[in-house]
Structure formats: C-alpha cells, structure tokens
Length: 61
Image (tube, rainbow, N blue to C red; front, side, top):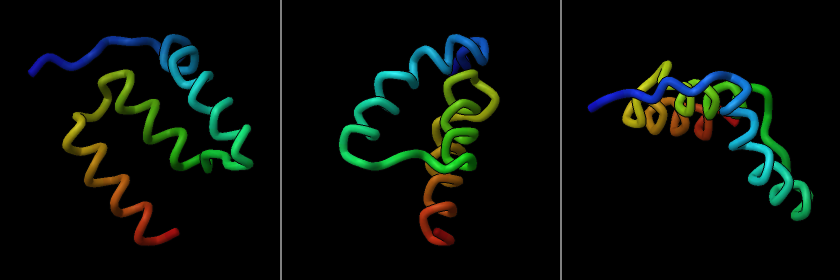
C-alpha cells in the first residue's frame, strides 16, 4: 500500500473542518490526538498503526 505524501500544511487544511465540527459540539482534540491524526494524514504511519495508537490513547485517556 502506498503511503500519502501530504505536507503538514495539507494535513492541517484537511483537519480544519473536522476540528470546527467538534468545536460546535463543545469538543476538541488533545495535542496527542491531533499529532496522531497528522501522522496518519502525512503518511508517517499506516492506517493500521493509527488505529493501534488511537486505541492505546483511548485506553489511557
């Protein structure tokens, strides 16, 4: 599977609407959550690794 080569800026642009939707509901991403999503969007980690780390984060929240 090919990994994405999005830049940090492109990842932030993709995240902006989702973060706005969360804010409307009174929610926000923690810095760890945001960093994890950016790593997935930029291809630094695979989707499988993203799921693994997201589950770990949720268990320690």
